[in-house]
Each structure stands twice: as structure tokens, then as C-alpha cells.
Image (cartoon, rainbow, N blue to C red):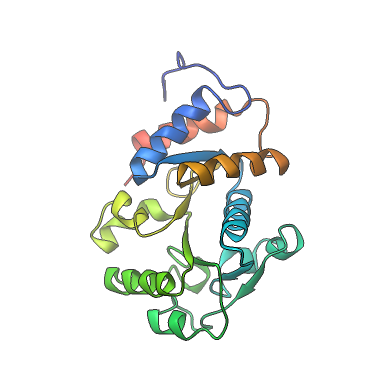
Length: 225
């Protein structure tokens, strides 16, 4: 069997879903995690929650980032957020660009790697400097880590060390891990508790999800680089 089917099945997010959430939280060194049926939903919820906490609905991100290109303007249409662009160059934004952005923003979202720019990644030094620049502007940092599983060899740092730079991280299970679908949002316990409430409001808490979750657990066991 790909995974121990003697584990409790799930009902509205408990059982094997909670097992997966705890495992990913531990892998990323985060306090808590929430499973979502899609990464699109996970990130919209994360950015919405951070906007409520920072009091600023502006999200700084690259114009080629997934929410800008592939989500039908959901950040604004569904969540009432707006986006600002530190750069239009086909690469990750730099620390200088973050410092010089001409308006305040509550959250910096970095897609690692930036897929639509050719899977671009910064160096570790560039990444830490960009994060520090956002902190200097009193912003929180969220990583779109759909393909974060593949990043440790490039950065020379573990998943937990990479995730430690951010306030929250999203990871996908059908990219790199050969899963069926699904995503996890990881971060502080209070943020994740709020995210789970919004997950329910967004229709992201089906009665049972064990086929998808078991595939994700199997991917962590057999496909994690």
C-alpha cells in the first residue's frame, strides 16, 4: 500500500487531513498548517487574512505571479485586495526595488520559483535581503511555494530554513510530489485558525478528502527530493 490505510479517515478536516497538516507544519518548521483543495484558495485566504491583520489591502508581488496571471483577478474580485508591482523585469524583485516601492503595502508575496518568468529563483543572499527590505517597511512576507520542494538544493538550505524567512508559506502536492491535487498553508497558529474559518466560507471543507490526502502523504514519502 502507498500509505497506512489503518489511519483514521477524515470527516470535515480531521483524521488523515490533520495528520497531513501536522506533517507539513513540521517539515516547514511552522506552528500549524491547513489543507486546502486548491492552492488558489489557500493563497487568497492567506493574503486576505494578512490584509486584515496589517490593515493594508495592498499586496506587493510580481506581475507574472500566479494570482496576477491565472486566477481571474480573484484577489480583487473575491477578497477586495489590490496588487502593486515592485518590478516588471522577468526575475524576482530585489531588496532595492522593495525599499523604493512608491506606496505602502501590507504583504510581500514571493513566488519560489517564479514560474512564468522561466522558473526564476534568487540567490539565498538576494532572497534574505529582499525579505529584510519588506520587514523594514513593516510588511509581512508570504511565500508561494508551489514548487518549494525543489528549492533546497538551489539555496543550500533546508525547507524549514527557507520557510523560516516568511510569515506564511503555501505548498502544492501535485507539483513535484505526483499527488492528485491539494495544497497546504503553513504559518502561525492564530493565522491558521483564521484561515480555516475562511476555508469553510470559501467552500474548501468537503465532507471527505482522504484520496487526495493519502496521495499527498505518499508523495512526501516517495517523491520528496
